[in-house]
Image (cartoon, rainbow, N blue to C red; front, top):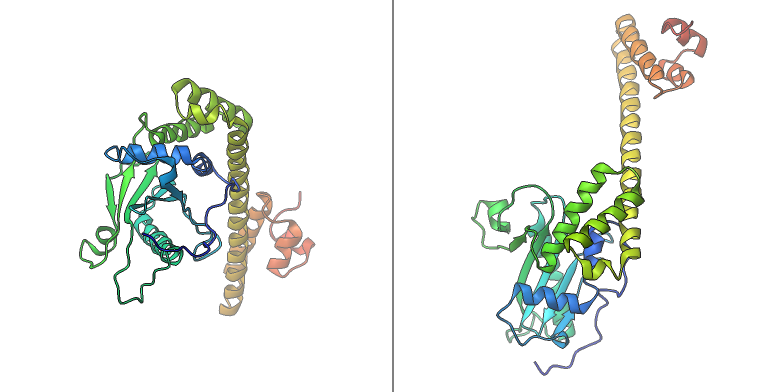
Length: 306
């Protein structure tokens, strides 16, 4: 376009912190040659594009610190391609894509020394939006912001093409890799056995072989970390359920006292607290404190004495 570009706003880094299997997708496309391969598969009609025409612009830390997209790149100032990889279906993807696209355009205008406040029309690359979905849900080939949120009646729309089939394309192989990984997680409790078997099967089937052979250690680390995250998440959920249950008991006790239904409420509360003690959720001391009695009184009233 012949415009002098300003110093660019930092976007994608060469490396990333791996936190889930979706990060295999992010890791894969840190190699611009694979980005070029992806683009050629999405746009086979564009036969002249080269690596030099690809400008990776994946967003990091947009809007809030935890929000970012998986892959974004420009092609010769002609296209802006945004790609998200998800294993769980998310109907909000068009909305998220709208956020990513707006932020990417904002940065593009800054880099190209253009302004939306100019009296001249700015020049923008055409958006091309994709979701790579590796889950089991039957999904449409395209999802629309207008259709999902406004029954098709909206002056604003964002359309996202959905890629969900296992095939020989780089995204199709990634989907195959994800499905193998999910299958092996159902078989193996040992995370290293699961990860190694996933890699073995994927290499055998030809899923991301070119990547896994050169990055097997990184893949093992990334997928192993997913096991750790899921375990911590499950433990957190258990702790939260126990906390909420205990808080609910406290509220019930206070309400019972306030309403003056002493005997009936007390009997029900003691029975519930005794059950929590027997299940190992509360200690006898914790239960006695909630019932506002001494430990010995609680043991007697709740029938916990041998």
